[in-house]
Amino acid sequence: MVRRRPTYHHGDLRAALLRAGEEQLARTGVAGFSLRQVASRVGVSHAAPAHHFGDAQGLLAALAAEGFRRFLVAMRHRQANAGDNARALLVASGLGYLDFARSSPALFRLMFGDERIGKPTEELATAANNAFLHLAGDIERLLGVSAFANPTAMARAMAVWSLVHGFASLLNSGHMRTVLSMPPEQQNHFFQVAFAPLLGPLDTD
Image (cartoon, rainbow, N blue to C red):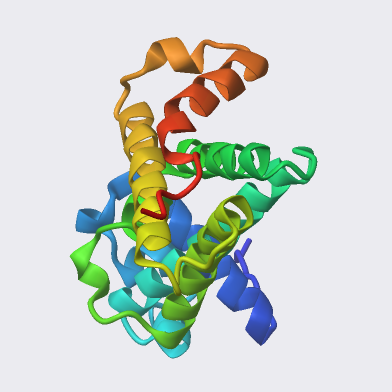
């Protein structure tokens, strides 16, 4: 019996290639990533991903852009149940950051540091910028001043980002197991305490 290759509509094939690309990335990392392997996973010719993404860099950039979009969804999902307190919303956003990092570690590493992507595409730059604007909005809600208008507020935003990203990296590398074993309420309290030095009012002197 002859096995037929699946057929796809244009948008369906792109989505299928992205799913296969993420699976390949999780399996081999960037070092073993190739368009041919991704095409094989989907059951199409090796020219199919090239048609949509150009080359491996293009597919990796598209994966990173998709990662940033899902990353933003994860932060907003946590905030949806956090009420309207600015501190609680910022902590919830940080917990969403960790949720994404832990659920998609290979994609998380790609988004924040792989040089193989090269110059970011417009799609990737927009998705990454939207994620940062979310953090900036959280900081403005907390401090009452835009990080883009106040250097101290921007420094606070960068400090919060660095802290949460550090937690994410430690968790993904197998450290901080004590935190992972905590029930959700204790995890929430842990991060509130950890963020506390960065969540106070700005020093206006």
